[in-house]
Length: 166
Image 1: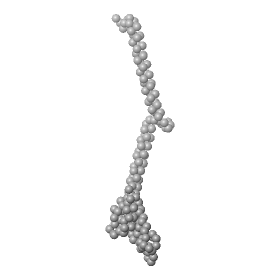
Image 2: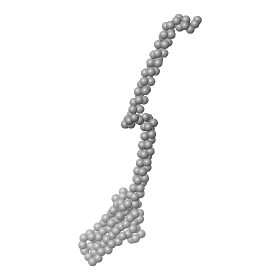
Image 3: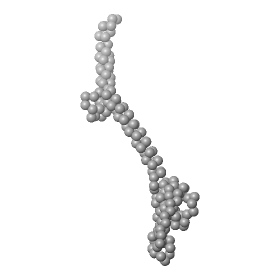
Image 4: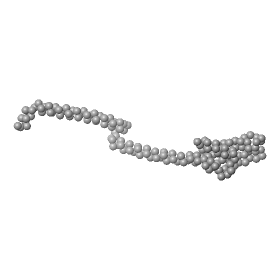
């Protein structure tokens, strides 16, 4: 049998086969159309705000933006580290104690002031006022203590400053 004769003899089967293939192609076409719409939607979102640009230009632009942001973040981190170091050594808590150094001769004109940094290093200033004279002292403080003898008021001023660190 020749192919033409076979096709004519089985025309119903051939038509059904062609119809089946067309139906299958239609289903594939619909699925691909839905996928294409999704991709187009994502592409429009990606390209939003970029006129006359293509995907390659958008990616280069985004890459440049990421590089610039990375440099900015590095600068911010460096500035933050610098500020943290400066804060560590800056004057922080202050403790003030006023008192009457000579009872019965006036009011609380004498004082001790402790100025410390975050490591409890700094100085304690003391000024003692009397009727006839006034004296001032400055003593270094390291880790909340001094190598010089401290009066009770100076110790109290340091303790007040250290309490403010907590």
